[in-house]
Length: 594
Image (tube, rainbow, N blue to C red; front, side):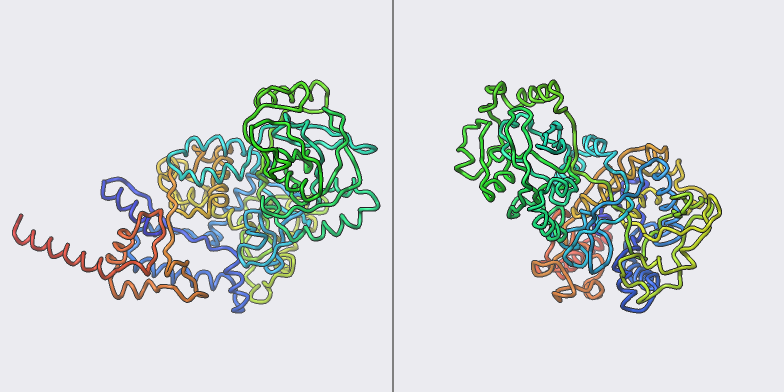
């Protein structure tokens, strides 16, 4: 990505444009903290030493950046403004705390956002993730779900469609209806469905096994079975639970609900493939027309009834749900209608009966931002037994990290190491003056990197977070270069931050990056370079042998910037010979005066 950015910057510079090409270091985070624990040091020592090493490498590589605008997210001068922005979002109601089940990494002893769990494991250390119920800080990114989706129209043609598709799917806007099912001798259970037209095809209901509703509905004879199932569920991430190829399992709760359209009794099950915080945490299962419902029905021996004629084989026979367009059958007054008309009529019916209403829901969840680690931006809040949550006064920002913790004192213990720094934690309440305690969690490092591009416009302004005139001159970013792995993390978070700051009157635009390029990786022998594989290539050695220009030209000639380059297949020596011929030709032309 460094070379790709260099090429873009040089292109526009050569054409006579003013180009802002800054650099910064996303320098908070777990790797530095874990390294400090191993070295019995403070994370700042290891972090800034590595930055200096990398900076020398960049300078040797001839990277033309504006070093006067260099940023470090771990500098108090920077995270002062991260804390200030947190407080603005808090005042707007966009930052809040709540109790909820969270992903927990036993190795790193901290919570993880859903996006940081890969195949049920921590993306950092690979440890199997479990579930815990904790009181945590969140950003209300869901308030911007529609804006994040609708404003993609501005990005179409300028961002890779793959990234836009990933964000659309992650946000997951669904139009449909809430439908009320009366549980026999129990409460009303409301489900969300995008296909109310298929109500006649519902043959059972499923409740998220870890939802309070499942425990509420469970009969005495299945309570122990449900508890054992819920315990196993703590080891599985929400993403893995939704995988279509995951074997279906569940517990029959011994209860039935009544279909509001047909009066049919539907058995109620608890299962892991329904999420407690998606929709209402309960679904009506239509196995003929939803593959996960069909897989569950076949696993549990439940009936399958087709209500949509698509011309395909009966799902009860084929084992493949029919989800395409078709005509309604076996559906009472909906028979003969197409999908669109049937959905509209079904919503009308449940609304007329008082058992449902049209609605919109989202897959996107609020951004879990608090972490139980040391090396991050402290959350600028004080907890007072009398006043509750109190923001640290702005003239006391930044709340800096203590400097007397290091090494094993930073080792994960299930709560932030900051909790042990008594002299740092115990403070007077800014509101009443009574005894209070600082919040001991730190922010997810993606908070730091969600707004850095805005600070580049006026990095040395210590009186305000942004210089409005500088923002108008330089922002939004014309060309962003970054990997596709940032699609549902940094890029989505940066878009949210920009929109929220626009609504606060702090920035004059709603999208941070006009254009996006996903660069490829440099591989070696078909695999990503790593110390464990021993296939790394020392850039310094390559520069010594072939020179900066030859190495750069090798990369440029090897492939388009979006594609991977295998260093085993390229020849910097050939690029060096080409450059030597070009220089000889230039000298010859100059000598002849042509």
